[in-house]
Length: 384
Image 1 (cartoon, one colour):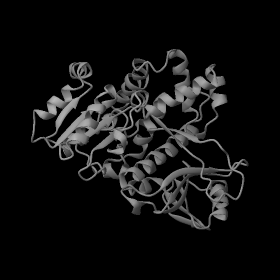
Image 2 (image 1 turned 60 degrees about the horizontal axis):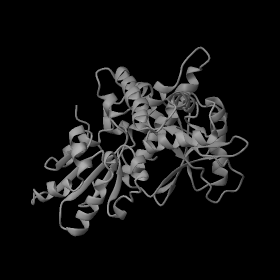
Image 3 (image 1 turned 180 degrees about the horizontal axis):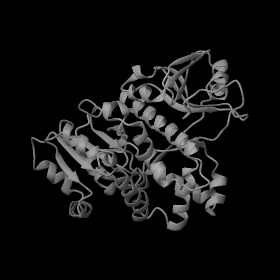
């Protein structure tokens, strides 16, 4: 089943395409560049040959003088090839276009790679958006099994998601040699599911995992480098009151969060569902900014006394504040953070996203059903 992705390649430029495994980078590139020379670095024999002799890449390109595009898939497996790519770009400015994909920035960082000295643009691919799926989007399914294309397109999404988490989130980390003590790292993964959509408290996570704060910082860097998680900074522009200093943490996909999150008699389903919904909105807003190349930053706002706005979008493209709740009816407490934000920033458009069915205007706050909001995020016009 074909899903048309909103990502567009930059015009005639070399570029990196980053995204977690399973988000469809190779599928999208094969559709965009069907005639490209394809170098799959996940293939062991290809990887062995090119790591042993990186200059072989130069020979492959020279052997096809009419070549227009070269794709290096999962380039972090052989970061030394970027030196050859850089040399080819410098020597032959009219030569083929290079497209390099990656699902981990860690090896590139460790190798001291500077992403071709700024000669390549960076693009990112995310899980599906509701707008991409149209009538095939199911909010309940998205909250439970997520929107990673590899999982979503499977005839058994739950089984595919469990395999994805086991084979990628756990084993990939171990194979990369990123966690020396896998038992403590697995405790960390579980602990971080309780931080999904919450302000980060590294000292508390360290105590729960029985490791040092420095170890937790290192583990957190692993998640970020593998593109499995991201954080949002605090919105501090023209701040009129004291704000929290710590960022908020999110897993990159609601399904990955739900699978890693332990469940038992002491867990409140509404709490887990609320965190999953907030994360789903976060991944949509983040993808929209990347795909539309909007001049917007994504952050959150929180005061020490508990007034909070989940998402603040700010930039030349506009100024919005969104609070998310999984409730089907609106309570005064749901509006408290947005009202406080509106007092400080009357220029902002303040919105409450909820699981109800009616669009309401309560003072300065516009209350929107979350499912149609997500379906409408096909472009900047969707930020109503």
